Length: 81
Image 1: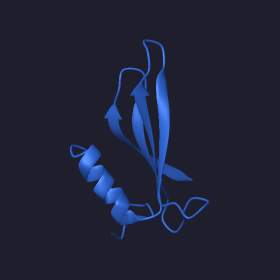
Image 2: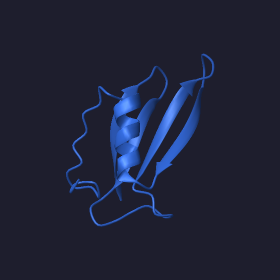
Image 3: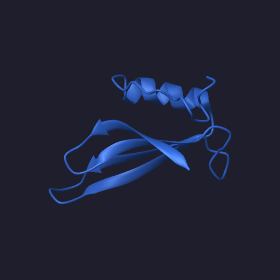
């Protein structure tokens, strides 16, 4: 199983960070997945998926794109960092 964290609320859909539980990783060696939705038109958004294998790259991306997001990684594979 995995935990989901809300990064940003959009009108139609939200940007979500998905992190696996403690002691697990996603298939392919990924430690986190971000599902971002960009406005396409009034009825739908365009989804893009970003996958991270490195915790440092994830932290850099979160600091740059979502500086207002405060995430508690307790109980996830990123808890020790």
